[in-house]
Image 1 (tube, rainbow, N blue to C red):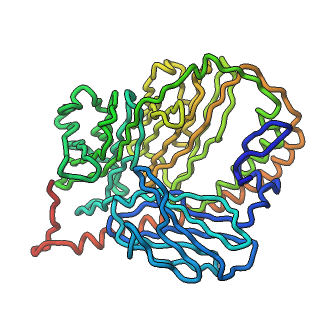
Image 2 (image 1 turned 180 degrees about the vertical axis):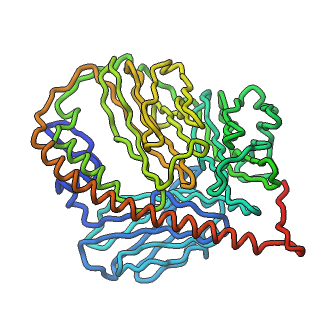
Image 3 (image 1 turned 90 degrees about the horizontal axis):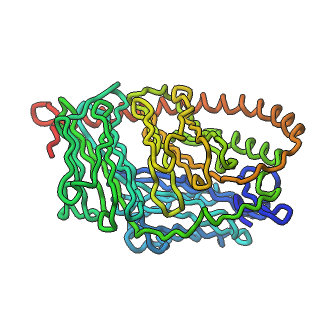
Length: 504
């Protein structure tokens, strides 16, 4: 059994977080543990480091091997791109002569570096380590996102888009395009352009939509398929693509021009549209036979909360978004879907953004039903009507909502997306909602509450100290990055000492 999978209990199975299994001693079968960053962002032409560390219960020998495999963002088979055993072996394929070994197996480091990355390198990387007799381990994945670095005079802004989106034929999809500036407090857009390309082929470029002088204009075959979702005063150039078809797949480029600024800020989203998945009578013929194992007993809930508290310990510069993995709700009742986030920066309504989406199945499109842009906006999907109520408070780092009169058809995955500049990376958490037809039996949780209160209080103090340290480091790093960028831009001037202006 792998860590984080299922644990048997009385003839049934229930899912436990990996931290809980470790606390219970279930995962001792894994003698080799690997850690890797879940997402890495890089810029075209600039070396990127893919970190991978491991811990083995056996001594390091010459038999230890390291393999890195890769699958493109567009899909396909995994391919081995790097191999190490005592010495690194030459790389082949598209990464030939571009991967260098920067690890040290004696210190449990199996990291590599990719030279001159390009946008076609976007994909999933897997680090695998074997140190016989330790050969069983978890399989962490790293998603690499390579984008173009926008360099512009007198601005530290950037455009945020989703690197990749998936949708099914006939559904709608939100193409986000948000301009963010870590220095300026606000901005106003002068023009927004959306273009579509076949892959990275700029020769097959077509206009999709443009917004100018308070007029939104879909173009060509997208004339009746695009709806403006943005706001020029909050620098939101998002659009919604409706009734998408398979031939809508491609790279969508968003270009933003600001008032009194000649530079074009841009970024892109790769959209994959798949044929409609045939769904049978999923909900109407469901029979709900609930057993004691369907709901975690209270001591297990305590351990789950304990593992969540441990997971709050800061490990990187990205913003953390926390939500329970699974929520059970009784049919016809109201349920709160909790989503909170940690950020070292104060929430500013002009910069802060929030999206709640619903996903009926794993391969289904995400449907946007709740959004925050300057204020909360309820999209009131036919699925939910007026049953969604925002009950959070972004200034207190809470973006939760309540779903009233829960129906069997409400089962699915609810995604919480949060962006709070100057944090450049958007945080994400998902909740799997399960709808029950009868209330589960209650359990005596007196002991769990007493132990939980004692241990939880101690952990809260530890986490608070760690968060303070993290915030100080992140703000210091943000200032260093801003100063470096300004220094670099000041060096790029024309003969008269004036910055070059970008033109389209």
